[in-house]
Length: 147
Image 1 (cartoon, rainbow, N blue to C red):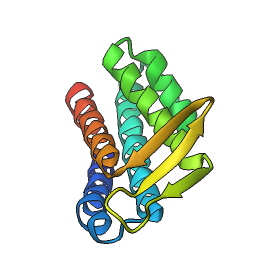
Image 2: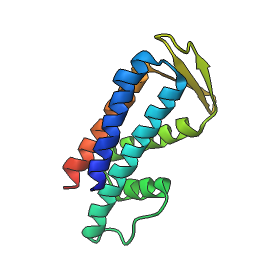
Image 3: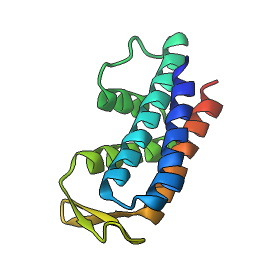
């Protein structure tokens, strides 16, 4: 199974978490699970892009850690779109690792709040839809540009 297939499978799982599980179980644990699935989809898509670059002899090796793979892909791509996607990926990684507070669990407006420097990042159901769409756009972008 190619990483592209893995990325698509992770998107399917995230889709189910957002549109089914989160609808009935409005908790921050579900939000965290969705974020982890989106990060996994990004990881697989980045590996897929780097594999193509390695086959074309544009890079010598694929780094072992996800952050270094993303940084390498960012340095090899001159497209502003790719840089934006990878900065978003790093934001997802930050949100996943950060301390968070919960608000309105089990209600429609369940929110997970994370502090980044002096900025507050609120992740709610609507924001999860945006995160999902952006991740799907990245996977599609990699499929289109690196095939």
